[in-house]
Image (cartoon, rainbow over all chains, first blue to last red; front, side, top):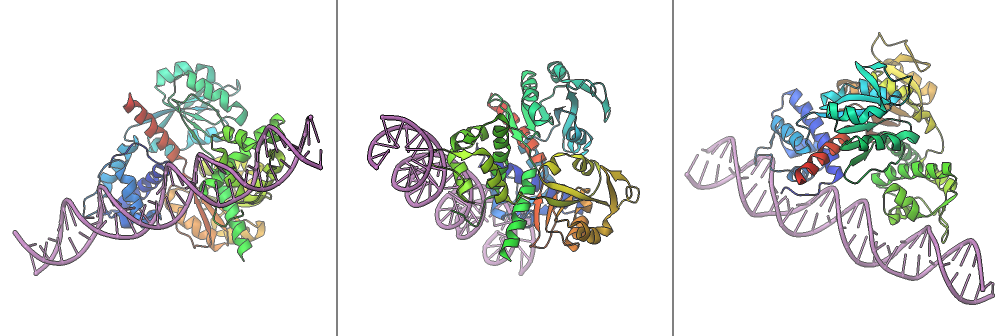
Length: 212
Length: 212
DNA sequence: GAAGTTTTGTTAAAAAATTCACATTCACAA
DNA sequence: TTGTGAATGTGAATTTTTTAACAAAACTTC
């Protein structure tokens, strides 16, 4: 197939597929059918085949998918077959947690720079990384080849952080701050808000009570 | 309208609406049209009206929506017009960060219990809360009226944490661990995986390069 | 090596979500 | 009081996403 526009939902599912496939691999499973993978991911098997078809043909008819090959193929499709250098702006509670989160480097996203505008924080070492003044972003983005900016400032400072990052030539921004920001259209912007999961849980629990 | 099944995407958008409406409120705006709210949220204005219609009629024709009223109405609709008690299982890096994250209580999700099975951690105080052995979950869930469980264990221990929580009578689970788990159908389960945002960014940045 | 089995990739159908379009309702002014 | 303008709520049209169905392809067995 190899199409142009890929749904956001497909990207999210591919992340799940990688996760489940890695578990299969750890268990020693070499080959898996879309049916079996679908069950483990709680999705429809056509869904999986369709999602993969956006990027190419990775399976063997009558056999299924070779687990390791499929992991590799999905990673290549997503562009995570190589490492990405990230810079984090806003070293508060959440920022610190992300800096310490092992999963980032494990997944190929290396946080190489930590920035803050608080003079009390500048110079402090977190996870072997020195916190640097946000004003130095342009120099550091070049020096460290940072491509993705992570915003973990308080909401009122998120836009300024975004401006710094954009000015420094970053290519994409992941905004963890609970506020909307605006960036030029050539910058890829993603909002992370895990609270909607809590809202969904609250809503469904309440709704279930109502049914009784 | 007042319908039964509400799309997941609607819940996520309602979270955005609350966020943007709160900003409007802070700026002193009393009334807002779906058009203006839509622009601030980067969605279609019909989308907003449709999303709200699932829960009732909150606007005034010819006028718009009263900002404070709409915030209140959305919160009531989602079931976050009251506080929810949460218990967190797995006090690693991420777990600690969430325990310290001010946003939780600000949004009405109070983390009242912290659990871990590591004897070195048990008894330690984090954010004024004593880390308790996971085996005590049943007692604590009752004692503290915990309704939502947060899993922040390593992936291989997520299922066990879920089992403990379910056995203790929790109503919903938010799983931050990068692994799939299974729970009885009456338990509401949400997966949090912010890495798919990084994948999406990586994919789009790569794709943009390809276009050049 | 032909027949049978399995499972993919893909087209067609169904379902769901989004957007459009407008009648309805409200505020305000003449 | 009636008319005008504005913006909601909603049914209809459109678009997108998901699911079903099946022909094509690769192994297996006889």
